[in-house]
Amino acid sequence: MQTFSCRCGNPLFFENTHCLSCESEVGWCPACNNIVALEPLDNGGYQCTHEGCGTALMKCHNYAVENVCNRMVVMAEGHADTLCDCCRYNDVIPDLDIEGNRERWAALEGAKRRLFHTLDLLKLPHGIEGENIRVPLSFSFMADALPDQGLWRSTAKQEKVYTGHANGHITINVKEADDVERERLRVDMNESHRTLIGHFRHEVGHYYWDLLVKGQDEDASCRVFGDHNNPTYSDALEQYYQQGAPADWPTRFISAYASMHPWEDFAETFAFYLDMVAVLDTALHMGLSRAEYDGTLDSMLQAFHQVGMAVNELNRDMGLLDLAPGVIAPAVREKLTYLHQLIHNADASPQTN
Image (cartoon, rainbow, N blue to C red; front, side):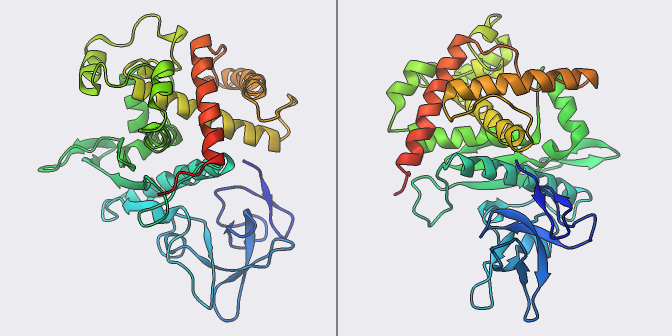
């Protein structure tokens, strides 16, 4: 992720809604793909102040009304679409009558915007119902529990909400946006990392299995990740939670959870690939990497290793978790090679109806 510049010269960041120097309102301009200062127009709306752009814009409804977004939409003939290019993917939003849910929703939207930024960097196809996409993508942010004095308690007569994916629809339990609850779950489930953006990257991995692999490249996927039909997902899930990951999982999988079933292996490895792309995008824009990165997987892994080791040491200086694994096992590298080619092919052959 690059940084941006306000018209006053102050740096702006991807999440900003105001410039802290000149106090201008700012937002993401979809015409020039920048966070920009917004100049109010006499007849309503705003003008992008980025040099050479000047597009007439209006705020996304979730920016103007709900204050959980910072993206703009292009104004056409005095009006604009209600929702921006990210918020339009929402099917269900959190119950805003519950204290704290607006802040949790804002955190969810921030992670989702970063997800879409990375997907668009890779030119991966996606779209909503009614558009020319074979598997529409959508999101629901829901809860099966309520916060009570800093803890979460179950709600009566309500089904449990599982973070997951089904047929292009991604559901995220809003308690994952609660830092304390998410850390408790990370420790309870013995996960090295459990982050909000990580959930989005993992679940969208399932989406791209449906979009790019299902009924199209399943044999090749099986050769790399294993047969997703044997054992069944339910049998594999039960076995994983009874017995845990095999002792040698680091030699074959990117994470312990990836060992549960080939679908989870695909999603976890896909999420790691997105991690690498996002980290390298930021590192290269910030001048933190001197490694040559030419778009090949070898150069990506080399650059990520360089950046990852440096950030790992910085994190250890501060008592924080490592960013990157020290070694990529050969079996994991084979899976990343498959995904690298799959993503490249998706760019060349959009998945339309």
